[in-house]
Image (cartoon, rainbow, N blue to C red; front, side, top):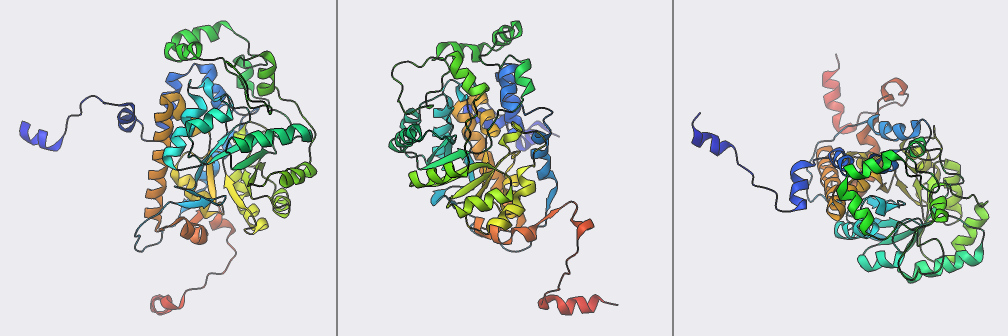
Length: 432
Protein backbone atom coordinates (compact mmCIF):
# COMPACT_ATOMS: atom_id res chain seq x y z
CA UNK A 1 0.00 0.00 0.00
CA UNK A 2 1.35 3.42 -1.00
CA UNK A 3 1.68 6.33 1.41
CA UNK A 4 -1.04 8.30 -0.38
CA UNK A 5 -3.41 5.33 0.07
CA UNK A 6 -2.67 5.25 3.78
CA UNK A 7 -3.33 9.00 4.02
CA UNK A 8 -6.65 8.51 2.25
CA UNK A 9 -7.72 5.86 4.78
CA UNK A 10 -6.58 7.60 7.94
CA UNK A 11 -6.64 11.12 9.33
CA UNK A 12 -4.17 12.46 11.84
CA UNK A 13 -5.73 14.28 14.78
CA UNK A 14 -4.08 17.32 16.22
CA UNK A 15 -4.09 18.07 19.94
CA UNK A 16 -7.48 18.62 21.56
CA UNK A 17 -8.35 22.31 21.66
CA UNK A 18 -10.76 22.15 24.58
CA UNK A 19 -11.79 20.01 27.52
CA UNK A 20 -14.95 19.07 25.64
CA UNK A 21 -12.96 17.87 22.65
CA UNK A 22 -10.60 15.90 24.87
CA UNK A 23 -13.54 14.16 26.56
CA UNK A 24 -15.21 13.37 23.24
CA UNK A 25 -11.99 11.70 22.04
CA UNK A 26 -11.28 9.65 25.14
CA UNK A 27 -14.54 8.97 27.01
CA UNK A 28 -17.10 6.91 25.13
CA UNK A 29 -19.05 5.64 28.14
CA UNK A 30 -19.78 6.45 31.77
CA UNK A 31 -17.20 3.83 32.68
CA UNK A 32 -14.55 5.77 30.75
CA UNK A 33 -15.48 8.92 32.69
CA UNK A 34 -15.39 6.92 35.92
CA UNK A 35 -11.81 5.82 35.19
CA UNK A 36 -10.83 9.44 34.64
CA UNK A 37 -12.43 10.38 37.97
CA UNK A 38 -10.38 7.63 39.67
CA UNK A 39 -7.22 9.34 38.42
CA UNK A 40 -8.34 12.81 39.44
CA UNK A 41 -9.50 12.12 43.01
CA UNK A 42 -7.71 10.83 46.10
CA UNK A 43 -8.78 7.26 46.80
CA UNK A 44 -10.71 8.10 49.97
CA UNK A 45 -12.71 10.82 48.19
CA UNK A 46 -13.49 8.61 45.21
CA UNK A 47 -14.62 5.80 47.49
CA UNK A 48 -17.05 8.16 49.18
CA UNK A 49 -18.78 8.42 45.79
CA UNK A 50 -18.40 4.75 45.00
CA UNK A 51 -19.19 2.97 48.24
CA UNK A 52 -22.32 1.31 49.55
CA UNK A 53 -23.65 -0.09 52.79
CA UNK A 54 -22.12 -3.09 54.57
CA UNK A 55 -21.33 -5.88 52.04
CA UNK A 56 -22.56 -3.69 49.14
CA UNK A 57 -24.99 -6.36 47.93
CA UNK A 58 -27.65 -3.73 47.17
CA UNK A 59 -25.06 -1.68 45.31
CA UNK A 60 -24.14 -4.58 43.03
CA UNK A 61 -27.73 -5.72 42.55
CA UNK A 62 -28.75 -2.24 41.38
CA UNK A 63 -26.44 -2.65 38.43
CA UNK A 64 -26.93 -6.35 37.69
CA UNK A 65 -30.72 -6.03 37.62
CA UNK A 66 -30.48 -4.17 34.31
CA UNK A 67 -28.47 -7.00 32.80
CA UNK A 68 -31.36 -9.39 33.47
CA UNK A 69 -33.45 -7.73 30.76
CA UNK A 70 -32.97 -7.97 26.99
CA UNK A 71 -34.60 -6.19 24.07
CA UNK A 72 -37.04 -7.53 21.47
CA UNK A 73 -36.89 -4.89 18.71
CA UNK A 74 -39.80 -4.46 16.33
CA UNK A 75 -39.39 -3.72 12.64
CA UNK A 76 -40.79 -0.57 11.06
CA UNK A 77 -40.01 3.00 10.12
CA UNK A 78 -38.63 5.31 12.82
CA UNK A 79 -39.14 8.92 11.74
CA UNK A 80 -38.56 12.13 13.70
CA UNK A 81 -37.31 10.37 16.81
CA UNK A 82 -37.96 12.59 19.83
CA UNK A 83 -36.63 12.18 23.39
CA UNK A 84 -38.48 15.15 24.87
CA UNK A 85 -40.98 14.44 27.62
CA UNK A 86 -42.86 15.95 30.55
CA UNK A 87 -41.76 15.37 34.15
CA UNK A 88 -43.77 16.81 37.05
CA UNK A 89 -45.76 18.95 34.64
CA UNK A 90 -42.74 20.58 33.04
CA UNK A 91 -40.59 19.94 29.97
CA UNK A 92 -37.44 17.84 29.91
CA UNK A 93 -35.19 17.25 26.90
CA UNK A 94 -34.99 13.57 27.81
CA UNK A 95 -36.46 11.30 30.51
CA UNK A 96 -33.53 11.88 32.87
CA UNK A 97 -33.13 13.95 36.04
CA UNK A 98 -30.11 14.60 38.23
CA UNK A 99 -30.45 13.23 41.76
CA UNK A 100 -29.42 15.25 44.82
CA UNK A 101 -25.96 14.40 46.14
CA UNK A 102 -24.35 15.64 49.35
CA UNK A 103 -20.83 17.00 49.73
CA UNK A 104 -20.52 17.76 46.03
CA UNK A 105 -17.71 20.33 46.34
CA UNK A 106 -15.52 17.54 47.70
CA UNK A 107 -15.23 16.33 44.10
CA UNK A 108 -14.74 19.66 42.32
CA UNK A 109 -14.48 23.23 43.66
CA UNK A 110 -17.44 24.45 41.57
CA UNK A 111 -19.63 21.68 42.95
CA UNK A 112 -23.38 22.08 42.61
CA UNK A 113 -23.12 25.25 40.53
CA UNK A 114 -21.23 23.39 37.80
CA UNK A 115 -23.79 20.57 37.87
CA UNK A 116 -26.66 23.06 37.65
CA UNK A 117 -25.18 24.83 34.62
CA UNK A 118 -24.66 21.51 32.82
CA UNK A 119 -28.22 20.41 33.62
CA UNK A 120 -29.59 23.69 32.28
CA UNK A 121 -27.64 23.30 29.04
CA UNK A 122 -28.92 19.72 28.67
CA UNK A 123 -32.51 20.73 29.43
CA UNK A 124 -33.07 18.35 32.38
CA UNK A 125 -34.20 18.96 36.00
CA UNK A 126 -31.72 19.01 38.87
CA UNK A 127 -32.40 18.04 42.48
CA UNK A 128 -30.32 19.98 45.00
CA UNK A 129 -29.48 18.11 48.19
CA UNK A 130 -30.38 19.46 51.61
CA UNK A 131 -26.76 18.64 52.46
CA UNK A 132 -25.40 20.42 49.41
CA UNK A 133 -22.21 22.43 49.80
CA UNK A 134 -23.50 25.46 47.89
CA UNK A 135 -26.37 27.65 49.01
CA UNK A 136 -29.67 27.12 47.23
CA UNK A 137 -29.59 30.81 46.32
CA UNK A 138 -26.16 30.54 44.66
CA UNK A 139 -27.30 27.52 42.63
CA UNK A 140 -30.34 29.53 41.47
CA UNK A 141 -28.07 32.40 40.46
CA UNK A 142 -25.73 30.05 38.60
CA UNK A 143 -28.53 28.58 36.46
CA UNK A 144 -31.59 30.87 36.61
CA UNK A 145 -33.51 29.06 33.86
CA UNK A 146 -33.01 25.61 35.34
CA UNK A 147 -35.86 23.44 36.62
CA UNK A 148 -34.71 23.15 40.23
CA UNK A 149 -36.01 20.71 42.84
CA UNK A 150 -34.99 20.81 46.51
CA UNK A 151 -34.31 17.72 48.60
CA UNK A 152 -35.08 17.65 52.33
CA UNK A 153 -35.77 15.33 55.24
CA UNK A 154 -39.20 15.12 56.86
CA UNK A 155 -39.38 16.94 60.20
CA UNK A 156 -41.90 17.24 63.00
CA UNK A 157 -40.68 20.79 63.82
CA UNK A 158 -43.37 22.67 61.92
CA UNK A 159 -41.93 26.10 62.60
CA UNK A 160 -38.56 25.16 61.13
CA UNK A 161 -40.24 23.30 58.28
CA UNK A 162 -42.32 26.31 57.23
CA UNK A 163 -39.32 28.61 57.41
CA UNK A 164 -37.27 26.27 55.22
CA UNK A 165 -40.15 25.94 52.75
CA UNK A 166 -40.40 29.73 52.54
CA UNK A 167 -36.69 29.97 51.78
CA UNK A 168 -36.90 27.20 49.16
CA UNK A 169 -39.85 28.88 47.45
CA UNK A 170 -38.18 32.29 47.48
CA UNK A 171 -35.07 30.79 45.89
CA UNK A 172 -37.17 29.56 42.95
CA UNK A 173 -37.36 25.79 43.52
CA UNK A 174 -40.46 24.34 41.89
CA UNK A 175 -40.63 20.93 43.60
CA UNK A 176 -39.67 19.14 46.81
CA UNK A 177 -37.89 15.81 47.01
CA UNK A 178 -38.55 14.27 50.42
CA UNK A 179 -36.28 11.47 51.65
CA UNK A 180 -38.14 8.54 53.21
CA UNK A 181 -35.16 6.18 53.43
CA UNK A 182 -32.82 7.89 55.89
CA UNK A 183 -34.00 6.94 59.39
CA UNK A 184 -30.40 5.89 59.94
CA UNK A 185 -27.21 6.30 57.95
CA UNK A 186 -26.00 3.11 56.30
CA UNK A 187 -22.90 1.35 57.64
CA UNK A 188 -20.50 2.43 54.89
CA UNK A 189 -17.36 0.54 55.79
CA UNK A 190 -15.21 2.01 53.03
CA UNK A 191 -15.73 5.44 54.60
CA UNK A 192 -14.70 4.24 58.05
CA UNK A 193 -11.52 2.71 56.66
CA UNK A 194 -10.75 5.98 54.86
CA UNK A 195 -11.37 8.26 57.84
CA UNK A 196 -14.78 9.54 56.73
CA UNK A 197 -15.95 9.68 60.30
CA UNK A 198 -17.71 12.54 62.11
CA UNK A 199 -15.71 14.75 61.98
CA UNK A 200 -13.27 13.36 59.36
CA UNK A 201 -10.04 11.91 60.73
CA UNK A 202 -6.82 12.85 58.98
CA UNK A 203 -4.65 9.77 58.52
CA UNK A 204 -1.12 9.62 57.07
CA UNK A 205 -2.47 8.00 53.92
CA UNK A 206 -4.92 10.92 53.54
CA UNK A 207 -1.98 13.35 53.37
CA UNK A 208 -0.14 11.11 50.90
CA UNK A 209 -3.22 10.86 48.69
CA UNK A 210 -3.52 14.64 48.64
CA UNK A 211 0.14 15.03 47.66
CA UNK A 212 -0.33 12.49 44.85
CA UNK A 213 -3.32 14.44 43.53
CA UNK A 214 -2.01 18.04 43.56
CA UNK A 215 -4.69 19.44 41.23
CA UNK A 216 -7.47 18.25 43.52
CA UNK A 217 -5.58 19.31 46.66
CA UNK A 218 -4.96 22.81 45.31
CA UNK A 219 -8.62 23.26 44.46
CA UNK A 220 -9.66 21.99 47.88
CA UNK A 221 -7.27 24.29 49.75
CA UNK A 222 -7.81 27.40 47.62
CA UNK A 223 -11.60 27.45 48.00
CA UNK A 224 -14.01 27.91 50.90
CA UNK A 225 -14.16 25.14 53.47
CA UNK A 226 -16.78 22.46 52.89
CA UNK A 227 -20.00 23.45 54.65
CA UNK A 228 -23.69 22.65 54.47
CA UNK A 229 -25.47 26.00 54.19
CA UNK A 230 -29.01 24.78 53.50
CA UNK A 231 -29.69 23.06 56.81
CA UNK A 232 -31.97 25.77 58.18
CA UNK A 233 -34.09 28.70 57.16
CA UNK A 234 -31.35 31.31 57.49
CA UNK A 235 -29.35 32.39 54.48
CA UNK A 236 -25.71 32.23 55.63
CA UNK A 237 -23.79 35.49 55.70
CA UNK A 238 -20.09 35.75 54.93
CA UNK A 239 -17.65 32.96 54.07
CA UNK A 240 -18.84 29.47 54.83
CA UNK A 241 -16.88 27.45 57.34
CA UNK A 242 -17.17 23.81 58.21
CA UNK A 243 -17.42 22.48 61.74
CA UNK A 244 -17.47 19.11 63.51
CA UNK A 245 -21.23 19.51 64.01
CA UNK A 246 -21.75 19.95 60.29
CA UNK A 247 -19.75 16.85 59.49
CA UNK A 248 -21.68 14.87 62.08
CA UNK A 249 -24.87 15.93 60.34
CA UNK A 250 -23.56 14.66 57.02
CA UNK A 251 -21.91 11.44 58.12
CA UNK A 252 -23.68 10.41 61.31
CA UNK A 253 -27.15 11.85 60.95
CA UNK A 254 -29.77 12.14 63.66
CA UNK A 255 -33.07 10.31 63.59
CA UNK A 256 -36.20 12.36 64.13
CA UNK A 257 -39.34 10.20 64.30
CA UNK A 258 -41.71 11.16 61.50
CA UNK A 259 -44.55 9.32 59.81
CA UNK A 260 -47.29 9.65 57.20
CA UNK A 261 -48.97 12.43 59.18
CA UNK A 262 -45.89 14.56 58.57
CA UNK A 263 -46.15 13.83 54.84
CA UNK A 264 -49.82 14.86 54.93
CA UNK A 265 -48.87 18.09 56.69
CA UNK A 266 -46.14 18.78 54.13
CA UNK A 267 -48.62 18.22 51.32
CA UNK A 268 -50.87 20.88 52.83
CA UNK A 269 -48.04 23.35 53.27
CA UNK A 270 -46.38 23.07 49.83
CA UNK A 271 -48.33 24.10 46.73
CA UNK A 272 -45.90 22.67 44.20
CA UNK A 273 -45.06 19.09 43.24
CA UNK A 274 -43.72 16.67 45.86
CA UNK A 275 -41.55 13.63 45.13
CA UNK A 276 -41.13 10.98 47.82
CA UNK A 277 -37.59 9.68 47.35
CA UNK A 278 -36.68 6.20 48.57
CA UNK A 279 -39.94 4.31 48.01
CA UNK A 280 -39.53 0.61 47.17
CA UNK A 281 -42.58 -0.92 48.85
CA UNK A 282 -45.68 -1.03 46.58
CA UNK A 283 -47.90 -0.43 49.61
CA UNK A 284 -46.06 2.83 50.36
CA UNK A 285 -46.38 3.83 46.72
CA UNK A 286 -50.15 3.31 46.80
CA UNK A 287 -50.44 5.27 50.06
CA UNK A 288 -48.39 8.12 48.61
CA UNK A 289 -50.77 8.27 45.65
CA UNK A 290 -53.77 8.40 47.99
CA UNK A 291 -52.26 11.43 49.78
CA UNK A 292 -51.93 13.41 46.56
CA UNK A 293 -48.16 13.02 46.24
CA UNK A 294 -47.16 13.87 42.67
CA UNK A 295 -44.32 11.40 42.18
CA UNK A 296 -42.15 8.82 43.87
CA UNK A 297 -38.51 8.10 43.23
CA UNK A 298 -38.08 4.34 43.45
CA UNK A 299 -34.69 4.14 45.10
CA UNK A 300 -32.58 2.31 47.66
CA UNK A 301 -30.34 5.35 48.01
CA UNK A 302 -27.81 3.96 45.56
CA UNK A 303 -27.19 0.95 47.78
CA UNK A 304 -25.78 3.22 50.49
CA UNK A 305 -28.39 2.57 53.20
CA UNK A 306 -29.97 -0.81 54.02
CA UNK A 307 -27.97 -3.61 52.44
CA UNK A 308 -29.77 -6.54 50.79
CA UNK A 309 -32.54 -4.12 49.86
CA UNK A 310 -34.56 -4.73 46.70
CA UNK A 311 -33.14 -3.18 43.55
CA UNK A 312 -35.47 -0.47 42.22
CA UNK A 313 -35.82 -2.15 38.83
CA UNK A 314 -36.95 -5.39 40.51
CA UNK A 315 -39.97 -3.72 42.17
CA UNK A 316 -40.79 -1.27 39.40
CA UNK A 317 -43.51 -3.33 37.69
CA UNK A 318 -45.29 -4.05 40.98
CA UNK A 319 -45.26 -0.37 41.91
CA UNK A 320 -46.52 0.70 38.48
CA UNK A 321 -49.34 -1.85 38.74
CA UNK A 322 -50.36 -0.74 42.24
CA UNK A 323 -50.39 2.98 41.46
CA UNK A 324 -52.01 2.68 38.00
CA UNK A 325 -50.86 6.07 36.75
CA UNK A 326 -51.99 8.01 39.84
CA UNK A 327 -48.51 9.45 40.27
CA UNK A 328 -45.30 9.68 38.28
CA UNK A 329 -42.55 7.14 38.82
CA UNK A 330 -38.87 8.07 38.71
CA UNK A 331 -36.26 5.33 39.11
CA UNK A 332 -32.63 5.56 40.18
CA UNK A 333 -29.83 3.17 41.13
CA UNK A 334 -27.35 1.38 38.88
CA UNK A 335 -28.14 3.40 35.75
CA UNK A 336 -25.01 3.68 33.62
CA UNK A 337 -26.30 3.59 30.03
CA UNK A 338 -29.04 5.13 27.96
CA UNK A 339 -30.22 1.58 27.34
CA UNK A 340 -30.84 1.27 31.11
CA UNK A 341 -33.14 4.28 30.90
CA UNK A 342 -35.03 2.67 28.01
CA UNK A 343 -35.44 -0.57 29.99
CA UNK A 344 -36.82 1.26 33.02
CA UNK A 345 -39.33 3.21 30.93
CA UNK A 346 -40.41 0.02 29.19
CA UNK A 347 -41.16 -1.48 32.64
CA UNK A 348 -43.30 1.41 33.85
CA UNK A 349 -41.09 4.35 34.83
CA UNK A 350 -41.80 7.88 33.66
CA UNK A 351 -38.17 8.97 34.04
CA UNK A 352 -34.82 7.91 35.47
CA UNK A 353 -32.46 9.76 37.77
CA UNK A 354 -28.68 9.54 37.92
CA UNK A 355 -26.23 10.40 40.69
CA UNK A 356 -22.86 8.69 40.49
CA UNK A 357 -22.55 9.09 36.68
CA UNK A 358 -22.67 12.87 36.82
CA UNK A 359 -20.41 12.94 39.89
CA UNK A 360 -17.83 11.00 37.86
CA UNK A 361 -18.13 13.70 35.21
CA UNK A 362 -17.82 16.48 37.77
CA UNK A 363 -14.72 14.92 39.30
CA UNK A 364 -13.18 14.28 35.89
CA UNK A 365 -13.68 17.69 34.31
CA UNK A 366 -16.09 19.94 36.22
CA UNK A 367 -19.05 21.32 34.30
CA UNK A 368 -17.70 19.97 31.00
CA UNK A 369 -17.54 16.48 32.49
CA UNK A 370 -21.17 16.59 33.66
CA UNK A 371 -22.22 17.93 30.26
CA UNK A 372 -20.37 15.11 28.52
CA UNK A 373 -22.11 12.46 30.62
CA UNK A 374 -25.51 13.96 29.80
CA UNK A 375 -24.58 14.15 26.12
CA UNK A 376 -23.69 10.44 26.16
CA UNK A 377 -26.99 9.54 27.83
CA UNK A 378 -28.91 11.48 25.17
CA UNK A 379 -27.01 9.76 22.38
CA UNK A 380 -27.42 6.29 23.92
CA UNK A 381 -31.15 6.69 24.52
CA UNK A 382 -31.55 7.91 20.95
CA UNK A 383 -29.59 5.01 19.50
CA UNK A 384 -31.38 2.42 21.64
CA UNK A 385 -34.83 3.72 20.69
CA UNK A 386 -33.87 3.78 17.02
CA UNK A 387 -32.69 0.17 17.09
CA UNK A 388 -35.66 -0.89 19.22
CA UNK A 389 -38.10 0.63 16.72
CA UNK A 390 -39.80 3.35 18.80
CA UNK A 391 -40.11 7.01 17.93
CA UNK A 392 -41.23 8.80 21.10
CA UNK A 393 -41.05 8.40 24.86
CA UNK A 394 -44.82 7.98 24.97
CA UNK A 395 -44.62 5.12 22.45
CA UNK A 396 -41.88 3.52 24.54
CA UNK A 397 -44.02 3.70 27.68
CA UNK A 398 -47.14 2.33 26.01
CA UNK A 399 -45.53 -0.50 24.04
CA UNK A 400 -42.39 -1.11 26.04
CA UNK A 401 -43.39 -4.31 27.84
CA UNK A 402 -43.74 -6.03 24.45
CA UNK A 403 -40.21 -4.96 23.56
CA UNK A 404 -38.35 -6.29 26.58
CA UNK A 405 -37.88 -9.71 28.13
CA UNK A 406 -36.49 -10.99 31.42
CA UNK A 407 -33.92 -13.75 31.26
CA UNK A 408 -36.24 -16.05 33.28
CA UNK A 409 -39.30 -15.44 31.11
CA UNK A 410 -38.70 -18.59 29.07
CA UNK A 411 -38.99 -20.72 32.22
CA UNK A 412 -41.98 -18.95 33.80
CA UNK A 413 -44.13 -18.29 30.77
CA UNK A 414 -47.74 -19.28 31.37
CA UNK A 415 -49.67 -16.91 29.14
CA UNK A 416 -51.22 -18.09 25.86
CA UNK A 417 -50.05 -16.20 22.80
CA UNK A 418 -52.65 -15.40 20.15
CA UNK A 419 -51.48 -15.05 16.55
CA UNK A 420 -52.79 -11.78 15.04
CA UNK A 421 -55.31 -12.26 12.23
CA UNK A 422 -52.97 -10.58 9.77
CA UNK A 423 -50.52 -13.45 10.22
CA UNK A 424 -52.99 -16.35 10.39
CA UNK A 425 -52.61 -17.24 6.73
CA UNK A 426 -48.84 -17.38 7.01
CA UNK A 427 -49.08 -19.47 10.18
CA UNK A 428 -51.46 -21.94 8.51
CA UNK A 429 -49.16 -22.27 5.52
CA UNK A 430 -46.31 -23.24 7.85
CA UNK A 431 -48.35 -25.74 9.82
CA UNK A 432 -47.70 -29.33 8.58
